[in-house]
Image 1 (tube, rainbow, N blue to C red):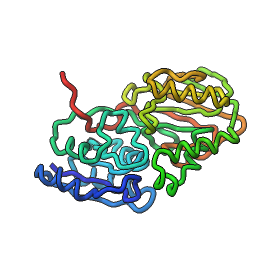
Image 2 (cartoon, rainbow, N blue to C red):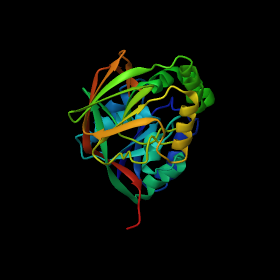
Image 3 (tube, one colour):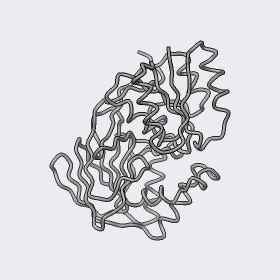
Image 4 (tube, rainbow, N blue to C red):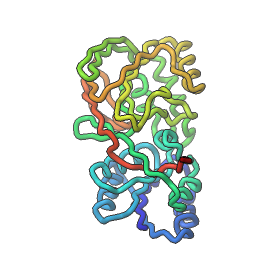
Length: 293
């Protein structure tokens, strides 16, 4: 079995990555090698090359951005993917029940005792994503959580950035078209989600968001009131549907906003609204812990 591991050395968790991989994959007798990323797009190129060269599994070590690049590269191929969490946020790993500890995640791959789960991939224009498209408050929060801040404070960087964003909340009127049906709502943020996990403290957008259901979930946070937002966060942390949210579900989503807002696609620049988002059902297969029959 030949495994390619795409490594982002700037990932948020300082640890002896190669030593851990050698102690797990190497001792299991697996043939593995690495490709190290240096800039945006390197992960995509390395994963695509590995698929073309016939590797049996391509793994991503890093945060959500690295995972998204590797996943996008494997769409249209028969090569499955492994996720080795190493970033500040590891949302997809959390969604799929993959251990957040590198040694445990690598041991899962080394054991070869895993299932391959079909996972949906979203599309915005020519850009593919696995987590979500965001507009409004979360976009401001992610933009303010700099790499330096994340390196120093980890997931708390998002909390600090969130408080900063709340001083000038980007309230907007959203017009959403879901499979041809129109809706309107005023709110603090709009999220088109493929994955439920936020990657922060185990919080999920909703228990009903499923990365393998062939659909996208549109969520609008209606309130700019801090107390209500805090309550929504508590709901999410407790596994309940957050209060003061509007939610719809479909396969093709168009979002317009007044005023126009910046768009992030899995944390990367996606231009401005309006934006059209669609779903590619079961576009990739990912190694996940085996479930009992």
